[in-house]
Amino acid sequence: MNVRERKKLTARLMTSLLRGDLPAVRALLRAGADPNAADRDSTTPLYLAAVQNERAAVRILLAAGADPNIESGRGDEGTPLTAAAAWGHDDVVRELLAQGADPNLREDHGSGLSPLEWAVRNGNSETQALLGAAGATPP
Image (cartoon, rainbow, N blue to C red; front, side):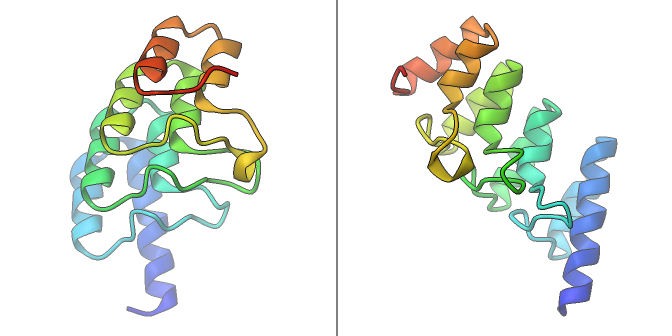
């Protein structure tokens, strides 16, 4: 598969995620879409699914090999776990932690906030408890 075809698959995957079209997401992954490939804005599929609170999509992407610890964006997004923690998407937080997301991984290549710091900042107490149980270190 050439670079152009890979970019098209990534674009279609992101569109399918935005629409919540899980059958299309599965089909695109089977067709060779890379679950870790960022789009032209540097957003990764797993980050997008986490921000949208789409636990089923998160599960599908993780099963297809998405790395829960890859940072999305160009310094303006973060990791899937920091996104889910910031928004209090507890089901997504649980899924990411169960599949190996690092509860202490800071965004911005290690210089930004941790998932727990986001949860505290936004008053997401259940998220804080989930992260604490997973070994998140308090700030």
